Amino acid sequence: MSGWRLSGTLVWLAALWLLLWGDLSFANALSGIAVAFAVLAFARLPSVGRADAEHRARINPLSMAYLLGFVLYKLVEANLILAWEIITPKDRINVGVVAVPLRTDSEVAMMVVANIITVTPGTVTIESVGSPAVLYVNVLHLHEIEQVRADLLHIEELCVRAFGSRHDRAQLAGEVVAR
Image 1 (cartoon, rainbow, N blue to C red):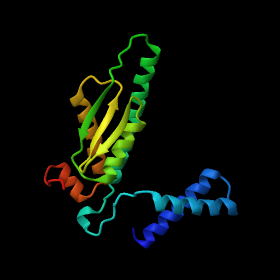
Image 2 (tube, rainbow, N blue to C red; image 1 turned 90 degrees about the horizontal axis):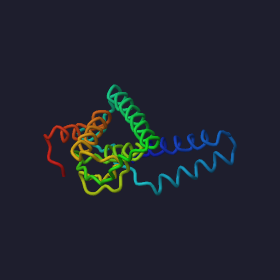
Image 3 (cartoon, rainbow, N blue to C red; image 1 turned 135 degrees about the vertical axis):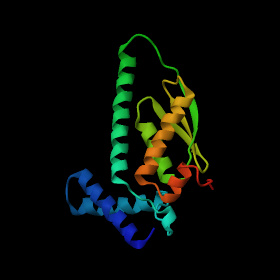
Image 4 (tube, rainbow, N blue to C red; image 1 turned 90 degrees about the vertical axis):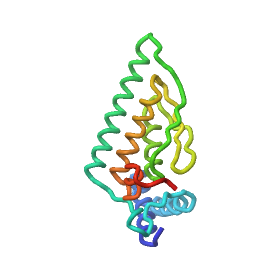
């Protein structure tokens, strides 16, 4: 990570710490800087800013807005399904684990897809293996394995369209063989 990007991330994390505490004091500012250094020292950050233009992330605001809307819709839908499951006497739970091989080797897209899966009620990412990653997902209402895979690959596609590099988009289109 370059010096400017590292210092910007450090300032952003410290500012976020101050906002979370809601009090601008010397002790909070100092502890925020210490926590920001600790996070940057111990966190494994994905390599987003490679030197070549082919691997540089490109943010598409419209695709990002669509991704956020889609995720919010899916969160509401999953909460309603889970609430209905709780209040009705009929048990429709069919738990299973599904392996979902992703099509790109983008660490950022894999991380976002895994987190979207985990925050959605009724699903949780158990593990990710390899590059391109294979996500193992525990599903509460498993009825069609291929439908679960298709839904998760759709989320990957939305992520790559929102903030993927040219290389990631080419992999998604099947034009590039993964490493």
